[in-house]
Image (tube, rainbow, N blue to C red; front, top):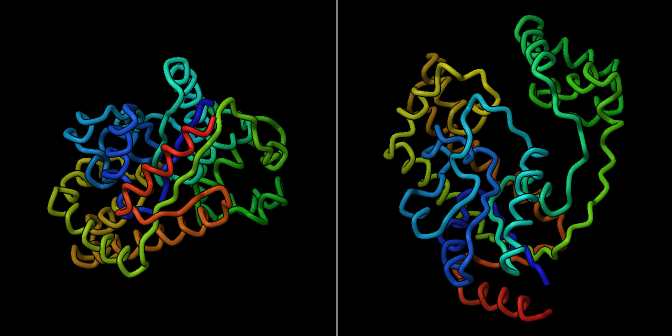
Amino acid sequence: MKTLVVVLGPTGVGKTELCLTIAEHLGIDIINADSRQIFAELPIGTAAPTQEQQQRVHHHFVGNHHLNDYYSASIYEEEVMALLRDKFERGDVAMLTGGSMMYIDAVCNGIDDIPTIDDATRQMMKARLETEGLPALVEELRRLDPEHYQIVDKNNPRRVVHALEICYMTGKTYTSFRTNSKKERPFRVLKIGLNRDRGELYERINQRVLDMMDAGLEDEARRCYPLKGLNSLNTVGYREMFDYFDGLTDRVEAIRRIQSNSRRYMRKQLTWFKKDPEIVWFHPDNVKEIINYIDTHLLDK
């Protein structure tokens, strides 16, 4: 039976090295599921696989887009499904790994077929956000799509604007496109979750941020600063550095905030993943146990 092995877990848990070992054991590539590691300009702040790691095992969806490119979970679903069709013609197993919850769900369960926004609508709403501000757009969403208004993150301009883009482009509510129906897949999914003690995760995240700074995160963020309004840069590590560049905080506080917001994102990831009963959880150091679990299920035809 064709099997997609999905290795998931929160930021800083230790997915990369484990997945390299699994991929080498199975003789397969790694399909990346990180919504920011796809951008070529952000290797340090997203902890993307290094060139050495990518030479060990071929990675898909790492550094294959640029910050100005329009990208979404629905595009990712389409592209990964096309890649999996090719992979499963050549073998019986493939592996997906990452921590981006919506990207993983898009491949495992499918997402609603929400229309792709055209450039004219996107530019129009971008201009309105800049001139009118987020509160005005939130109020408009309340009038146009009151059901989605009740659940949307009203402090997240990307989500508010996207819902309004759908309303304007289609003449229908964003809610009308959200069916949340699970799509059938021509393969089985084996989900492996990685987790550590909370205190250990905190320490790893704090140290990883310091390592990123030593590796050149500040210079990387400065190169991206002229594009800071892009949604692709609305992410932990870059928002805080931009505030530092704008004089809203100092460097020490920016680093502290990156650590704090990374820990907050880690908790959000775990809350999301813990709702999925299909995930079997392991400590990432238990490499032999994880590989044995995979091998046993692959033998179960």
